[in-house]
Length: 180
Image 1 (tube, one colour):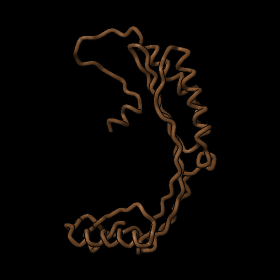
Image 2: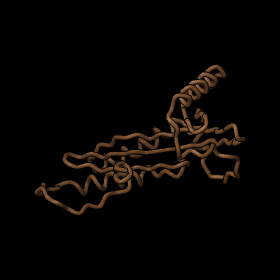
Image 3: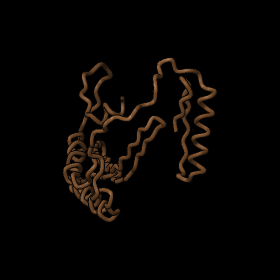
Image 4: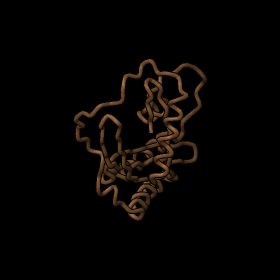
């Protein structure tokens, strides 16, 4: 809950959806706003506006079972084992709901799903990485992800040390995302 008292803003959160908890969180947000410094840049809470329909939910992902994700993991491991690599990582699927409302009349709700794979293939002296994220778990190709990580691991075999220095490097999107 975010409370605005003039240009003073306070925020509090809770993890229960009981009326008592919601009231308590709102009370704490208001108390924090009352003692916060003014935010000179704050103009107002948002007012109601049309909200575009954005795809954020996939029924099959929401209904996915651990057994089906385990089958995908078995496929990843089999690809890694063919090249004498060990595979580790995670494959997850989650469902969430977001509801927003304010005293100016904004009311919005959106369910969402998110699926993700993080995979590391490790050999004796090399490793490879792959990841995938999306709304629709059916779009994941476990074999393609495993082949990517394993290919990087295999290509790293026999790498030799280089002298310290300044080198141009090209980073993959996940590395750049981590740095950002």
